[in-house]
Each structure stands twice: as structure tokens, then as C-alpha cells.
Length: 187
Image 1 (cartoon, helix red, strand yellow):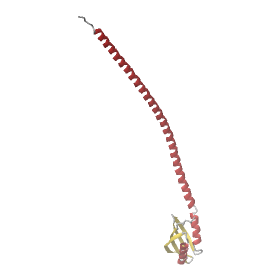
Image 2 (cartoon, one colour; image 1 turned 135 degrees about the vertical axis):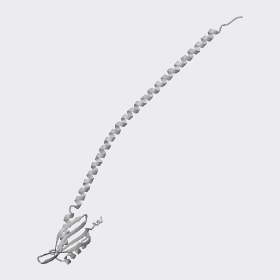
Image 3 (spheres, helix red, strand yellow; image 1 turned 90 degrees about the vertical axis):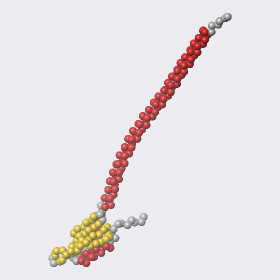
Image 4 (cartoon, one colour; image 1 turned 60 degrees about the horizontal axis):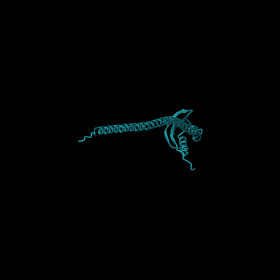
């Protein structure tokens, strides 16, 4: 009987199989390392680009914050200027009021029969204290004020006997009235 020894052939095949498996494993490992390196490179590039975009955005935000601060400062200055303009306009509107009031009172009072001693204007409410020769003079003065379109609500607060001067008994009076609201003219 003949015996054939197949053992070395199987051992060689086994070694070849092991070598092939080791080669495939090493090639797979190299491939995985290359793919991982490639993904790492791509991700690091994305991180770098995002970092640069963050820096650019941060720089733009700082730039716009400076501009916003300048705008806020300008708005504050503009508000202050507008308030100053309003004050100037109100002063301009009311600067002639005392002169006009004195002019009106001088036109309305009864000459040589009465004298004004005090005129007070408190936000459109006018109070006049004066001396007259008699009661009809005070009544005529009140009538003149009532007929004036600039004033309304004339009230006699008090009328008293004053000291006698050169034999005359004078009347001290106190009158209160308001300035009428001006009617706007049709444009």
C-alpha cells in the first residue's frame, strides 16, 4: 500500500491562508487609517474655516457695536437739542406776553379815574389790584375787560374802602380773570 503524505501541502495552504488574512487585515487597517486621516483633515479644514468665519463675524459685531454706540450718542444729543429747541420756541412764544398784557391793561383802564397797583399773571390766570375813585369806575373797567376777546371769566374778588386822600374816599379793588384760548385761523 502506498501512502501519500498530504500534510505539508495543507500546512503550506494554511500558511498561505494566514498570510492572506494578515495581508487583508493590514490593507484594511491601512485603508481605515487613510480614511480616518482624510476625514480628520476635512474636519480640521472645516473647523479652521468656521473659526475664521467666527473671527470675521466677531469683528463685524464689534464694528456694528461701535456704530450703534455712535448712533445712541447722536440720538441722545439730538434729543437734548430738540428739548432746547422746544424751550427756545416756548420762550419765543411767551416773550411778548407780559408786554402785551401791560399794553392791554393800559388800553382798558379808565384814565384819570383809576390806578393799577399790582398785576399778577399765573399761567394765564390774571389778578389785578388797583385803586378807583368809585364803584362805577371799577364796574366800567370790568365791562371793558369782559368785552375784550382776549379775556374771559372776569370776577370781582373784593372792593374795599381805602384811606382818604385829600378828602376823597377811594375804592381798592381786586379783579381776577383768565386769558382766552386763541382760536386758530383757517388756512
